[in-house]
Length: 413
Image (cartoon, rainbow, N blue to C red; front, side, top):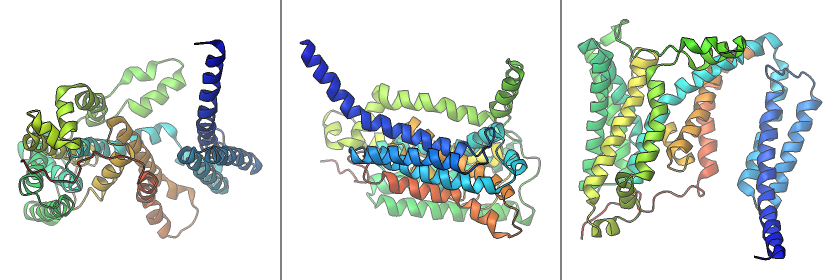
């Protein structure tokens, strides 16, 4: 290739990549806009975050004008939200801000809130990559939560609770598989029915076994992993920050993090994952090659239920150490949104789960910023994760490309 051709190619690449780069810079400026008003920066002058926000929005608008609409709009929205958030933060006292935005505590809480979503989202990935929509993740999580607590209570061991909870989720997923794969029923309707079935079964069994007394206070709990050595990493302040952030997390949080690379390798680097993806994209071609579409989908949906139930088990005996009716509170649907937002990939889904986890952690602390005595404010802040879910899903609808055969029952010729 001649020097002139190389120069032209480099210029074309630069021209194509510049809008994306500027858009990413706009996103960074939008995040910085809000960060400036929060600890440890604590900027209390209005013009500074406003100026940074205007720069971020301008970068986003420039990217939009150069056909990088998605990144550009994210930059614009983040910049506007950053300015609004910074102005609200400046209305709070510095002591309130420092009490709410303890970053080590927020990181730890984010990981805890993201863990059940991660288990359920990865479970949903296996089911939907095989071509079966799994709206029933919520019900499978709830079933795992109840039977995890019940199993731990009756066996006297968190290991027993973990095993029984996972088994219950797998069995419920098997019911979903029978109706959607063998009987070829509408997958959305059956998934919704599974959710109501789980709500009814767990509610009945909870009242039957525990009544008004609730689950015992001494339920065997999944242990925390204490990494004391982190506190001794120099400098001392950084070591304490690490220890307070990730040094006292529950064992199941680490299991969810370990599941990410494992699920990625299985799905995208092994023959098993290739079979799952093939029956979700072109089931007839897969069948022609000797891959059993029914068997593969049954296995994927059952595994999906088991993993979603792990998220429920974490809620009941790893997080709150008790069970209450409908304690999943829509987390299965948020996990489904994380899966879509992440493009049906484990690390993408985990990133979205972290986003929703952070919003949940923040929602617990935001009422402390307000000096208002109104009881409505804490309730309003609790809606933040669900509002964020709606925004996230609305932002990716039509852009994320699902498996080609998802939702379509397969009839063997």
